[in-house]
Structure formats: structure tokens, C-alpha cells
Length: 301
Image (cartoon, rainbow, N blue to C red):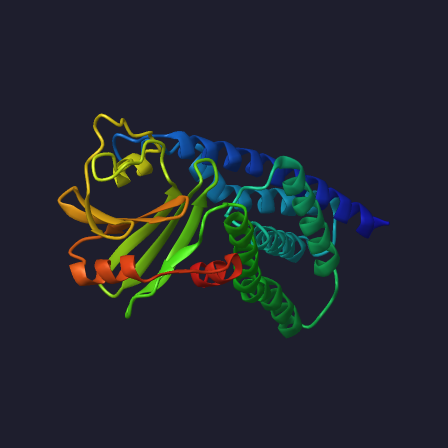
């Protein structure tokens, strides 16, 4: 019964500490996402140092409570509880497509289970070498599973987003270049695929053909307009010149941008710095449609 009491006490404190830290984490993440800093550190608050030292504080409080309670082996129980809780959090994040703070109740459950399990593991009397081995396995094993699980989760999330976009998934076939990222703006129906070829890179952007698209005078929004998610003013849109069937180019920011129409989609080839014109032309001329699964595999490595 004393063991159950110690595990319950540690679990309760672990749940409370994890819930508080999760609340601080979520608040800080929301604030940082909406903040537009003017100087370095503008978007950081007192919550960040609290989040850094918070796990140590919770572990120390669990140890102190177990020691006052008279629990056997309070120090290893508290330390193992912290390790198991960290493992549980890491596995939770492995099944999230993006690193997302857990909400309060899941965090409390992770803390309760982690520190409760720490007491059960800590009270098992093993030789010192075995104790070190158990701690090492608990500490390191999740880091071996995390990359595989997280990669699988990200691929599944990207594949679902790509399949729901309703636009052709186009990837240029250019020697020496490969896909490094691909993502969807679900609100504005926009696909962005970044290609890298050593020191050079460019981006493919696929959007629905904009209203009023009538080249060469009305060629749709610029890439800056797309980045700002702002509709183009037909009176101020930049003209373009034809270079082939359903293929135009125009100058934006002193760079030559290719525009290609594919049925109801408009494709931009947006260059990076000093990309050879021949590579951009090859990308515009060799756009291959791929499946959502294939694009997810290319984008998540």
C-alpha cells in the first residue's frame, strides 16, 4: 500500500507540474506565432526561462514530496519519473506532424503516468550496473524511434494535404536538382515546392488560374503578392511576354519568373539568387505530375 501511495503522490505532482508547463508552453507558442519583433528578444517572455528550468523544478518537488512521505529510494524514483515523462512526451510529439505543445489534460496524463511509473521502477532493487542500464535504455531508446515515427507522421499529413488540394502536383525534372520541401497553404489553395541544386535553388508555386488572367497584359499576381496572400490589382499587375504555348516570362525583383498554364492551374518558377537561366528554362519545360504519396516521399526525408 505504501508503494501505491508513493506512486499516487508522485503521479499527482507530476500531473500538476506537466499541466502548468504545458499551459505556459502553449501560451508562449501562440504569442511567438503572432509576434512581429522590432528587436531581438521582443517575442520572448518570462515563460521561456520557466520552461527551461520547469522540468528540474517539478522533479525536485517530486523528490522532496517522496522524501517527506518516507518513500523508499526517492532520488532514483524522481529521476526515473522525469525520464519516463520526457520519453512519453517525445513519443507524443512523434505522432504530431509539427512540434506542437500538448494541451493541458494530455500533458497532465503524461506527467501522472511518467512519475508514477518512475516510483515503480525506482523501488525495484537492482545492482548499480543494472540500474544504470535501465536508465540508459529509458533515456536513449525513444530517440531511436522518434525520427522514424515522426517522419511517417509527417509523410501521412503531407500526403493528405496534397490529395485534398485539387491542383496538379507538379515537380520539375532538372538534372542536379532535388525536392527539399513541399507544402500546401490549405486556405489559399497554393502548393510550394522548393528545389535545390547545390548552391542554387528555386521554387515552384502552383495556384488556380487567377480571375482576369489574360496574358500578356494581365498575368496574375506576382510572387510577392502570393507570399503576402494578397489579391492582385488588375490595374497594377505586371505584364508578361510569351515564350511558348501557355508559357510566359516576366521580370520581378530583377529576376525572370516563368509562368506556365496547366489547364486550370497556373505554375510559377520563382528563381533564387543567381540561378542559371538555363536551369529555370529546363524546370519550366519539364514539369511532371506526381502522386500525393510520391510528393510526400520526396518532401519528407
